[in-house]
Length: 318
Image (cartoon, rainbow, N blue to C red; front, side):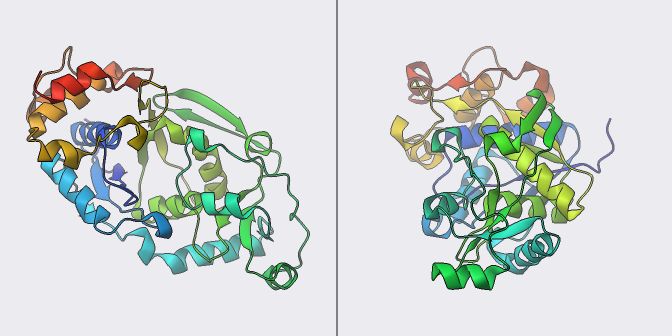
């Protein structure tokens, strides 16, 4: 049995209620951790101010507990760590690894949140790289505060994902220099999660594979800030709608709160999530205790799972 020194985290974002896709990721994280005796931390990723919904953080915690998922410690929410992020930005700028940028307000705003494939990644051409002596000059010329971008250079970033396999990314060709701090002074997703995971001692990051191409950016930041060793990454194939896009509002109401209000039991919902995760051969109610007894990460599907009519019928009692 592995030594109990490995750590993972559940990291809900209060930009909306937890839906079935989120729940499936959190369930796999929980089962993987508990069967391997890892510690589990809870962290609320609440940096995306305009999109944060009142009560969503508390709702996410309630949904997780309703499913039976627990954790060993709750660590500070991201909104409590602004100075930590600001120091890291100053460090990267002083080392010549980051620079002020007045380009593409839309791209800068997008960087606040965890990215997803359908959002599109804008390949930044480096228009502000080396253009400004400091932030004050950029501010004076633009007439507004600049964002800060991380210079990616030309090195390829390679890593072995425990589910997706060997990966190699050329950041200069896929995204270019990326935002690490917005113009309003708030840290962007990529920087915040790197610092949060390091501070908490996270050794294993389990998340959906829509964030697979975030990993090289985060590894670059870890290297530049001298944060080692990097975590081990486990990227799960997503739950998607019939249109092939990740599960979202466009596919109807898939919130856990919606199913709870309709009287769906935790065991019934766990049965669907476990079926999607390759742990059951059919949709049927199951206890968390039974799932823990038989969990095998090797049975996880290697392709996205489609949420369809049979799944909805099962949740409706069919």
